[in-house]
Image 1 (cartoon, rainbow, N blue to C red):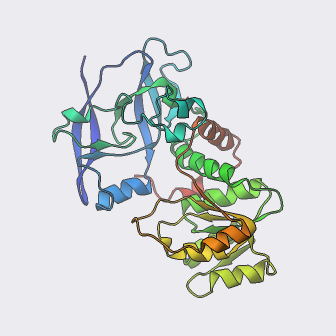
Image 2 (cartoon, rainbow, N blue to C red; image 1 turned 135 degrees about the horizontal axis):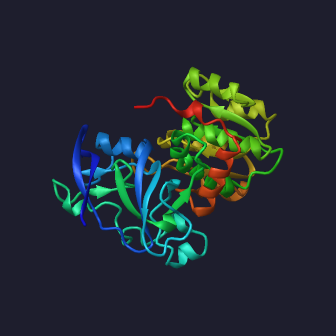
Length: 329
């Protein structure tokens, strides 16, 4: 039986409309997911503003928590009534997925779509997550149970926390190291909390006085105003001329990247966490990378293990989740 679902679609730049979308019939190894809470990602924001070239209508919402309503044949670890979050649209069949790189799954577009976008009122469009639909059908292996005693709002933040865990793991932070976080949005906050768990001393750079104050309140060792203070020289002062062991670049603007590299000590690592608003090239001194043995490391999304770890940290209340919730609508 065909099922309709109410969805909030981005129908053009700065345009939102509620529409009815069609769901695929529930298949084997699939679940019917009822969305309860969605956290909005910068990707959703950029799609809404027309900064990302997605085809319209665009159905977003990939940071979600909800309730399992039905399960298909073969689903063994989920049952109706379970609270759950969903992960990326990995296939669990390609070599990348089988070797622990599900965040890089090459078959994402081939996986059964969670909403039948070809039968929306405006035909076609694009889907990223799909949680801004009241219901979606989704493969069970893309769903993880979430503790019922915790708020749905916390569950919706599992995905961004998991992405940050992926970033922290790639950074190989060691106890006693000094790290610099450039940008103190939600992801900067999560990086701060996780880096402290790893035993690192954390410096935060952000032009917002409010955010710098918040960083200090949450345990940052020091903060930098990059508008008023030369970041690289301030880092040299804080670290007695040594530099930082690791930089997390969490802003979508490449203008501070060369300063980030200059802040690194020998054998330092620079983690490019944020996607960029454009594909603009930047100049890098390869001799400096070569001589100082600097690593430039990309990180994107999260894998299954990262999501499991995120849920454990949320359940154990190791990270305060409420500070990153700016409003509920």
